[in-house]
Image (cartoon, rainbow, N blue to C red; front, top):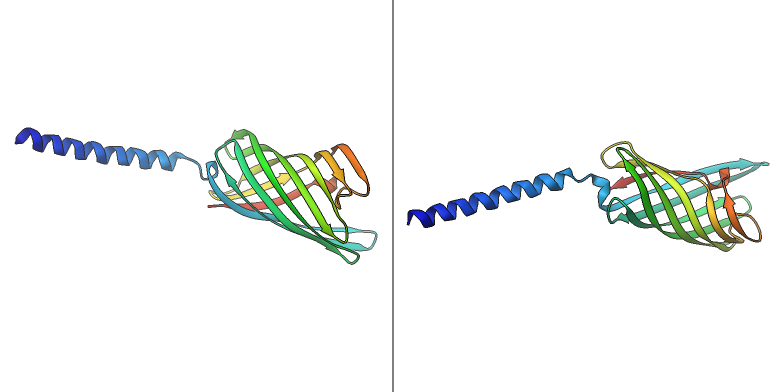
Length: 175
């Protein structure tokens, strides 16, 4: 009887200890390692007397410290045009150190409205964790193919471009 009571107590203690260890391991995982996030970018550009505004909400899911998927739906408007776009992407996070993450987005974007087009390519960026669940993000440059894409100008083309038109800033919240 004493042996069975001791066995039950030992099993209960072992089970409780494994639950505590599992909880501690779960807490050790950083919030950005896995889960959903929302955010976006806003922009304003003034050139030759014309004002252009951009609003681009974004959402995504982090599978782990290396891979994410996401997408954005946005609108760019001025006195002369209104363009809507959708841009799904896969993100490879090739450098994670402390608060800094460097990544490469592979995306396909489509634009419609007063101007149309599409683009397929890669865009590098960085993410900086500024609080537990808040992040600052920036992207610059583009390597790929554009076909009359509104932010890439008229016509078709392939290549590498680093310009202010490809510079974007945003904030994100993970949950």
